[in-house]
Amino acid sequence: TQLLEQSPQFLSIQEGENLTVYCNSSSVFSSLQWYRQEPGEGPVLLVTVVTGGEVKKLKRLTFQFGDARKDSSLHITAAQPGDTGLYLCAGADGNNRLAFGKGNQVVVIP
Amino acid sequence: DTAVSQTPKYLVTQMGNDKSIKCEQNLGHDTMYWYKQDSKKFLKIMFSYNNKELIINETVPNRFSPKSPDKAHLNLHINSLELGDSAVYFCASRGGATNEKLFFGSGTQLSVL
Image 1 (cartoon, rainbow over the protein chains, first blue to last red):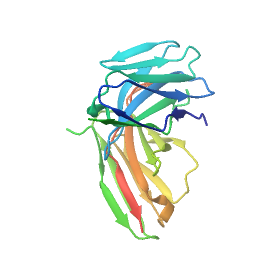
Image 2: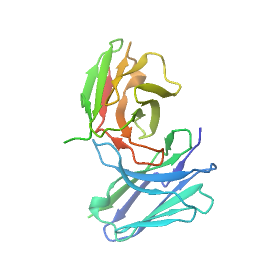
Image 3: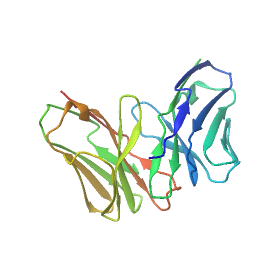
Image 4: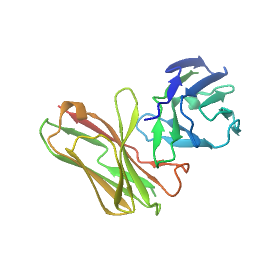
């Protein structure tokens, strides 16, 4: 089983501040996905990164895949209360399995 | 239209009972999953079906039995419920390769008393 460690587990910041959360593993993944989950709902895909070193932007969210395809980061610029949620990274292992990390719980205070 | 719908949303039951959770997807996807999310928000895969065939069966107690009558439906039946089964169960579907997105249902919160 490939383990994905997400840090920090919990992060609380003021509106307008920047934040970065991390997803690390000792295993190599063919691709990595980031999902956001809100209370009472299922996770919703934000982005998929495939190439080592790849950077993808989604409005104020910037996702980076590590060169070795073992880790990823999510940076949020000028966080808004609507960014509050549980951010989950998930790695594809090539055996039809998508393994999830335990998530980064982000709270943005107005 | 809801892409992946699961019922019920909430399920409260006594230890020892048998219960089922139903899932349907209208996306035309071939692959469907059941995930369990514990109180610490860890999302762990339980089962995966591809076109009605079981392809992933993680180390789940055999009290849990998935059934896929057709590729649009994947139901989960749980026998002899235990306290430790309390969690949120998510159904999901995927259209193609493993790096394509998963579409999740909104979850079933199971509480075993």
